[in-house]
Amino acid sequence: MTVELAEYPETTPELGRHQLLWTDFDEIARGDGGPGLVGKLRAAERSRRLLLLRGLVEVGTKSEDLYLPLPSPETAWDLLARVERAAPQELETILSHPYTGTWAGYTTRLYLHDVAGVCPFWVHLGYVHCLAAAAAVRAGISFEVELPVWRGNVVLPTLGLAHLPAEAPYSVATIRSSHGVVEIRNRHSVVRLPVQPYSDAPGWSGLRKAVVWSDDHRLAVRLDDLDPYRGLYEPIPPERLRPVEVESWRTVLDGAWRLLTRHLPGIAEAMSAGLDSLVPAPAMPFRLPSASTGEAFGSAIVAYGEDPATLAAALVHEFQHIRLGGLLHLVRISEDDPRERLYAPWRPDPRPIAGVLHGIYAFLGVTSFWRALAEAQPGHQLAAFEFALWREGVWRTLVTVRTDESLTPAGRRFLDGVAAKLQPWQVEPVTAAARKWAGLAAADHYAAWRTRHLRPDPDTVAELATAWRQGLSRPRCAVTGPAEPRVPTPVPDGDWQDSRTDLIRLRLGPDGAARFAEYASSVPGATGADVCFAAGRMVEAAAGYRNLLAADPDDPAALVGLGLALAARSAGPASRTLLHRPELVRAVHRLLRDEAETPSSVEAIAGWLGRFTH
Image (cartoon, rainbow, N blue to C red):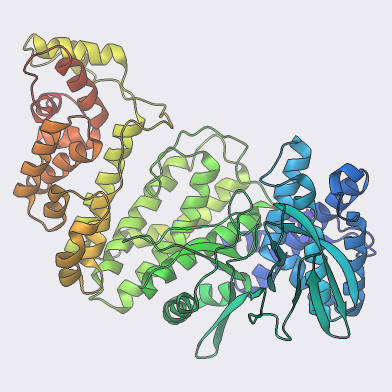
């Protein structure tokens, strides 16, 4: 496979040609490939960013209304050209900065669709001056240029942020570098950058780094809490970490890196070449959410957590997204299909095909990490659970979409590569406990998704309700079984927080018994019945869910929880229907209870439906 992208002629005298062989493609699909392959993806990203950057300079220069009160974007381009001549490696640092890509894509969309962002367009376009100034500071050349000020903040990407008193939300400041002295000033104040710009100084917040080692393996990332384009969708203000938080990040990152180099050395080696920046997100109790965007190659947004293993899994997850995002800038693996129609066991909502493919690839990496850790540490209950959970969830999802009409031939080949890695893991041994809890967690997620996003056929629901009132044991639709809803709705019917799986992880994690006893009641959204379920006390759990349903029969978590508690003891018709057709149980019960003075219980209706529902 050969991909050609044009470099801007003034930067390179010839058109650049990017080649990704099918053997490279297949390596990436399997989750393999070292720094060399990462370098090929980076080179393509460089071309894409240069094209977007030059396009913004050209359109921005045509109209003063787009860039005033700042100077023309062409002056930033000229400064970047000076940096290229004086210190080309510093230009490369700026071009490879993840948020150069985020900014270029976001600002291009604003211009093309003629929509307003969170700031005036000239502020967004003016980020090109910030990029050029940062490159010039890094190169040590003398220059003077004006920069946008957003609520008193002036960013120098990859370096830090200056804080200037400002009367207006958006204004202009001047940066001047001469004889090694760099100052940023407006009419109210002046900030002098320290000799080491990563350090803090009066009016200046330096961008912190985290450098961790494991034997000869090094990971160096910025902890970026400053850059406005570090988020997913819109520019965001700085959220400065306290020094103690920075040290906590470095400590847990050190532990995560040691695990990765020990158990997934191939991915660790590639990650050291492909992960540049971590955006620290606030800690979330009992979870470690993370995110990334294809335009910010090299960046991951990760919440803080104390467990190195969980952080290691999150890093692998986001690095897989980074690699796939780079690949998708070279080749299409699916057609444009925005329909939110597919179930994914890692999301609470229906997903489009592109999102499912990203999830399959990301969780291939997650599965590989937990597999390696479970193999190295047989007593690690959480690792065994996560491996059992994700190997099956990813495999089932892959099988479902492998023949999807929206896949391109390259997409089918991509999934073949994922399958080649994933399929042998399906028969690897795991403990009975890990298999049991993984099965319950998977059933929980799927049933809750069905309850909230599938709507049964109204005529079928009405027929079933009539048959129940008449005391029939088998309605007419029982011959073929009630029709299966095919098209999910993205609008959820009810709330659900996946608290039971949080409780399972708490119980199986480090110091599980003690931590479960102390913190189980603090898990967000967890009920007493959920705690009993995760503790293995299924009779108490079932009684608790019955009480919750008596108070609120529409509660999806209680509805599914009852099915789980019943199924854990014995597989009967009620549990089967509550886990496989919960949306039908709820719809029939809703219709009946609206008409009866003393409606039957959810469990009774589920048991009746289970006699003829597949």
